[in-house]
Amino acid sequence: TQLLEQSPQFLSIQEGENLTVYCNSSSVFSSLQWYRQEPGEGPVLLVTVVTGGEVKKLKRLTFQFGDARKDSSLHITAAQPGDTGLYLCAARGYGQNFVFGPGTRLSVLP
Amino acid sequence: DAGITQSPRHKVTETGTPVTLRCHQTENHRYMYWYRQDPGHGLRLIHYSYGVKDTDKGEVSDGYSVSRSKTEDFLLTLESATSSQTSVYFCAISEGGPYNEQFFGPGTRLTVL
Image (cartoon, rainbow over all chains, first blue to last red; front, side, top):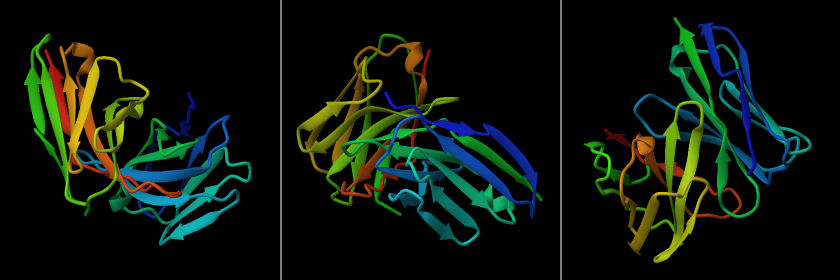
């Protein structure tokens, strides 16, 4: 079973600060996804990265897939209270299924 | 938003009783998934379906069964519920392919007393 680790587990910051969360594994993945989940709702897909070294930007969010396709990071610039939520990474090995990490719970205080 | 509904949204039941959760989609997506979410574990795959009457086990399938008789419906059954199956259950759908973007339903919170 492929395992994903996410760090930090919890993060509480002030509005306007920058932050980076990480997703790591010892396995190589064909692709990796990042989701955000708000309380009482299902996860919502933010991005899919498929190429080693790939960088994708979504407004204030920057996603990077490691060169070896074993890790990924999510960087948020000038965090806002609306960024609060649980950030999950999900990695795909072979086939159509993904393995999810335990998540990073982010709280952005106004 | 993708058209995915789950029913019921909340359920409290007793140990040993059978429970069926329903996932319904209006997107005509090929793949459907059932996950459970527990603190510290993220989402764990229970079963998935890659077509009508085509299903396979996921990471935590013991104690669960599924059925898919129509493209739009995917049922998850707990034959005899146990307290360890208290969790939040999410259904997801996808079209497969290289990106395999999954769209999740709102979840069902199940409590087994």
